[in-house]
Length: 131
View (spheres, rainbow, N blue to C red):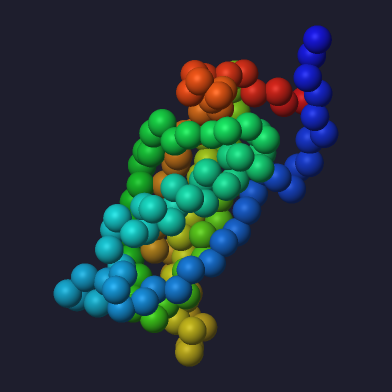
């Protein structure tokens, strides 16, 4: 018996926001790279989960590029979009844009790809049921 689900194209992209607080920066006043990666992985997970409607786990991150620093006090917009899907996995492109909340000046700070796989209750890969 085949399981079916309704596919909604809006579930291929999500946007979330963060604020860079003093505890999140290094001695230069810029966002720790690990914090940026954590936010990006979270955005990729939310996007992949909404897309697949399965339990998803990150298996790889690729081509993460730190282009410009993110400063304490900046607003951060993370946009994640499914760019590819396979039998059990999805690839999600995540873009991190920093914004000065006073001047509204924005810049691309970081971008990268994340691969997430659907798993069953035993943690084993399971097939995606996409239209």
